[in-house]
Every structure is written in structure tokens, then in C-alpha cells.
Length: 70
Image 1 (cartoon, rainbow, N blue to C red):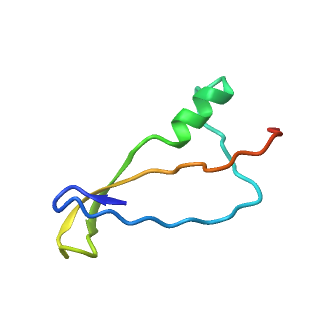
Image 2: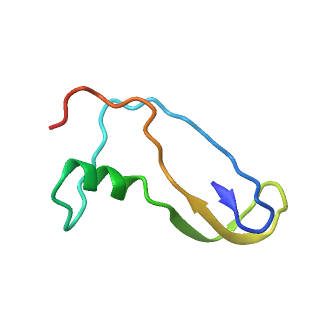
């Protein structure tokens, strides 16, 4: 997450076994991954640094991808 007001960012990581990447109107693996990692705006989230209610930006990153996709 990244606060638009003070630029504070927080990261968390999680190991997962499977990942549902179903996206409407996307037909390629590359398109699905691009859609999954797009920036999402979260309205009125409270920043843990400046304590302001602000629009926060959230996005996902894949650090290691599996060799098989189904």
C-alpha cells in the first residue's frame, strides 16, 4: 500500500499455493498477469504513518512464478 498524502508505503508478503487469475475480457496469460498486477485505488483508507484518511494505492507483485499454469 502507498499513501498519496505522505508517500508512506508498506509491504507484506505471503506464500501461496494457488492463485486464481480469472479476469473478464482477458484472453492471454500476459494480459491476465498485467490485469492482476494493476494499481488499485482504495478509497478512504487510514494511513498508518500520517493517520489521515486518504486514497491508498494497492498492487500485487509476483516474486516467483510457477513453471506450470492451468
